[in-house]
Length: 249
Image 1 (cartoon, rainbow, N blue to C red):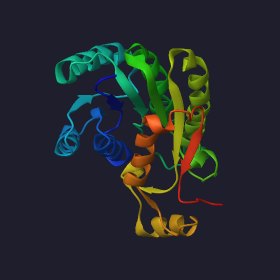
Image 2 (image 1 turned 90 degrees about the vertical axis):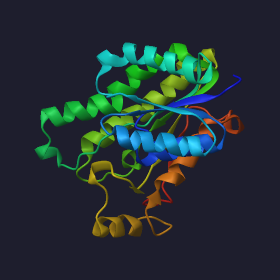
Image 3 (image 1 turned 135 degrees about the vertical axis):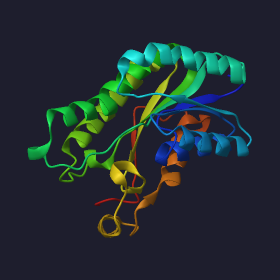
């Protein structure tokens, strides 16, 4: 792969944007997706370009599987037009949404939406983009420390992130013959806009449950994602790496 380009879903904010910046610092071009906020995506695109790399922002709702075939064509065109390449060096399944609701109050519509975004979407998007992943490319699925530590109010979210963690191992197993690696990154409490962000009280609570005494920053997770996409961790495969500062140990 002469010019390495990675695709990051949900790259317009939070962990996705941090991963885009980290990849750019490592010399990689970035295709990032956004759902609604084109201005935020454009801002991240400018940040990547300020770091000396090129970026393309494409609109995508990862809950709409029926659009993935068209999206693959858009990615293929962007790779050719912007970088003169035909394949990706990495895929980061990061796009997500939050919901804080006890099991007794979760509606079927909420359950289904979380399922589409956090498990069904990554499954079929990876399937759709598989022909574009170069031999030696890496897949990183962003999961959550809530798969390990039960937190009341996030049961569907955590359950589907747990499914994505299992799916990661199956991707590693089945895609190995294609020369692809697959790993998961499992963030703990991170200061992002997911589910409306953290109130000062909730941040203090989460920080108190973390060995390092604070919540994490998106850039701290983004750097780990970028490393897992790189060659120096090329023998790390089928693993889930918790990036949490020691959350509930």
